[in-house]
Image (cartoon, rainbow, N blue to C red; front, side):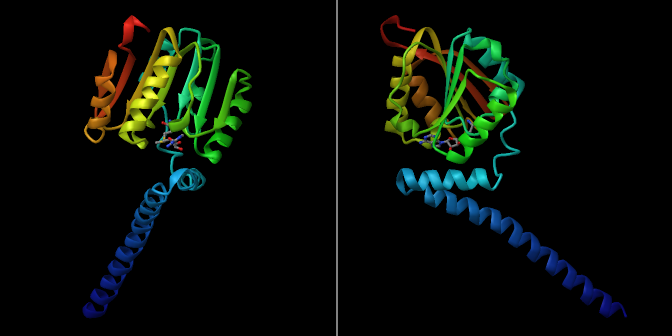
Length: 223
Ligand SMILES: C[S@@+](CC[C@H](N)C(=O)[O-])C[C@H]1O[C@@H](n2cnc3c(N)ncnc32)[C@H](O)[C@@H]1O
């Protein structure tokens, strides 16, 4: 009798183990495939990011903390905000719409942008626009008060990061700043240092592993 119970227990443990392995292995495999797809140019990146948004992978990971919203409200100064790599843009769900005159979100994923457009429609925000685009090819704009790079700059290579930051600084007005967030300053140490090297650091907030950097241009006293 004891022998039989032991046997059925071990089968149960084995099945539970196998279930976990498949479950977590499946998640791991999916992430590996997405990473691999991102190596294949713009099209690969687009498919990989669309896949992540379609699978709901970012749904629970993108809740916005109060620090982020406070910083955005402080530095938007009633002006124009541009969010590069905005994702489904949950920022606008929490942000007071009176702190900015217009809001533009750009992301490589069509699925993410569709979510963002739905969010804006649901809230009746007429001064928010969203479009699909590669931020590595963003040509810049004029008179922006705040450019947000929330968990997105480290998906570009070092040359692209530098060129993008230069375009950002050319696009700001005299009060303007760039906000960069990274979920782990240890993992993204190189990116943080690169950004700091070519910028003036206005404010740095470290919370747990997370870092928020508010930057301005170092050139000619501009910005
Ligand atoms: C980690 S998610 C962050 C999304 C959002 N900013 C947030 O924090 O919730 C990174 C985002 O960057 C976008 N992204 C990555 N590479 C990009 C590129 N080259 N051009 C535009 N968007 C890009 C992805 O589609 C994704 O939405």
